[in-house]
Image (tube, rainbow, N blue to C red):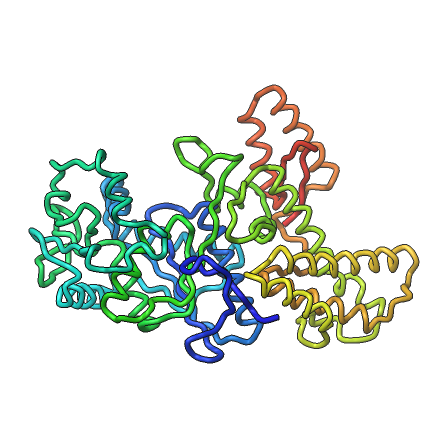
Amino acid sequence: MTLSIYNTLTRRQEQFTTVEPGKVKMYYCGVTVYDYCHLGHARACIVWDVVRRYLQFIGYDVRYIQNFTDIDDKILKRAREEDSSMEVVAERYIQAYFEDMSRLGIKEADEYPRATHTMNGIQRLIHDLEHKGFAYPSNGDVYYAVQSFAEYGKLSGRKLEDMQAGASERVNVEDAEYQKKRYPFDFALWKAAKPDEPAWESPWGKGRPGWHIECSAMVRDRLGDTIDIHAGGADLIFPHHENEIAQSEAVTGKPLANYWLHNGMVKVDGEKMSKSLGNFITIRQLLDRGVDPMAVRLFVMMAQYRKPIDFTDDAILAATNGWHTIKEGLLFGYQHGEKLGTGDWGLGTGNNLISHTYIDKFKEAVDDDFNFPGGLAVIFELAKELIREGNIIVHQGKTETSANELLEKWQTLITLANVLGFTAEPETETPAQDGLSDLEIEELIQQRQAARKAKNFAESDRIRDQLLTKGISLIDSKEGTRWHKG
């Protein structure tokens, strides 16, 4: 079976072919850097990280570009609230992004273009659109004329006449921006400068770019007119990706991307995540309270990437338990290799000896529209076999299975787990863990449970933080509290 993927543009699953044989040009619409990344960002970044890893695993040379939107109304609002500047806010949250993604084991992109570093390309693209009759200036702004692009709506399936009919009662004709437009759904390519906001010189006067034109320019500057994969969250299909297509293809006359891929959204306990509902969870909040980053990856990988997922305590507990199974399998060679003697158990690189039977089963599953849950089934099968063999070795001192067969399975597991970004090494004691025995940890957990029962949440949090400083992470569930070191 060869790789086939679901294309949002055509609404069907298609065999994957590339513009250049053996090479993939891939662009992921990254984050707007005005706050810490949340669970939705975690899902998207993990999904596209693993898609990239898998493409590399099956032999493609992947050039992966991910942008930062570093000029935006939300960034400017945060800067005003903090009496700071756009540059300071953006730099802070770009650095925070890298810290969070490193903790999740996400490989860095090949390049991270920023909107503010692509101003020449943005203005060039706007100029080309104006020259070709797809854009018009209006009182210092420049707008894209959506009616001039016959295929507008082809990604989202929306028709302008339907959109106009649906919006007719909601349009405020007195709105200043509305009055600048020739048509209600025209969108800004360039915005005239406002007092006390960053602005750049341009043929249309000082101002700054609109959001949609930034990505079109960054794709074109870094990857060319047509790329293989354009990825992002499903919430970006309209208007962002629809507008990207309209901008880029109007100028080049070529497809912007041959495959449009979109990941599903994240809910928390069945509700849309939002600060107003109090269920807004950042990546660092989640990890700082003791959830293993590999469990977060597994939580994301256990769902079909295009479907919504629901973050609940039970779901993260299931993912944590699942990760412990995979981890135990990954540690098999470190724990039992010396007893078996034969083979190179010390490296654990996954490159020496692998089972093509398992590799082929893994590929067959994942080649079906990046079916990572199907690939995980193969990984769990290998891990459980190794755990079973490990138990036999512990209790009987030996196993009937040959050392070479076990080495092959172990290295195959390491290879396939690495494709999904899962790694594990033997734990070593750190100074932060010194001074607390298992019994002392259990006693503190009991004290914390008593505090929670008495609704003394300040004391409960104090004990949790005390354990965390000692390298002890807690995971609460309906079944009780589990802990682990490291």
